[in-house]
Length: 334
Image: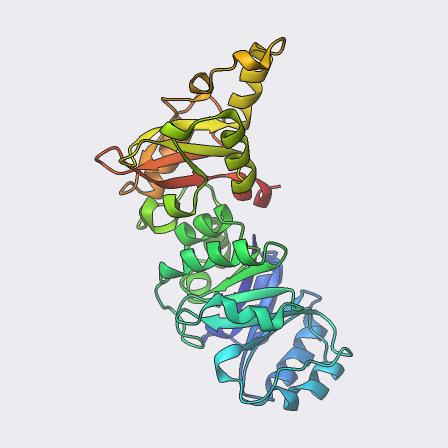
């Protein structure tokens, strides 16, 4: 996940000094907030003379068309317009280069992106746009999951309240870029903050239930409907490489993964009719409880003798709460 540094969050130093510090610490993107202020392009012109880092421009305006000529003259690598403020159609000319994004605030449903499906990414504002130092709203975790399901080929960017722990969770969810402002500049140094935003071990405030894939969105099969065909179709439809097995009361009975199916097929390769689907269930996989923290999660993984690709999340009464997968985190670390 790329870190996009919000350059105006540092109120104490001249802009050039801030940019030079960010360049020295190898920040990947420069996030430029434009609250309906055309003069921001003077800063962009200056930045272009100081470095060649990609510019991530976020414009809040009622009338985007007044920015088009300036964007043609001063192209940026990432261009985002705030959806809620628009008072005219957002018809960006093809002469404006760079990746295009739509920014939405927490109450706005991600389905509004459907009208902008030609854009490259969505920017989810997890706090109030333009205000620095806000707290990440956990509701946005569910919005990220929903967007990923509806628009699997689009990128997700997040702005607001991103600290070390939130950064870990966002990386695990496959977010492409996160904006960091006050957290980055209020740390002892930019380097210290960047280390926290990218490290694998973090202190915890969020619980697993805040960001897991809930059981309602997970591939589930009940133990009274177990057939090989049903198992295969459930795993295929879920597109996660496994299915959760529950009883009629939603108590967790185990997992069936692609690997479990493969082992079952190999065991009975000479006569597949002999396969007993019950034998495919891993009845005692590693698991975690919904009220445990990111720190507890990492501790469990570190103490496990084998790689964990997905981790069932249970309620204290033994019922399934959801699942945490690590495919996106592995991709983000490559």
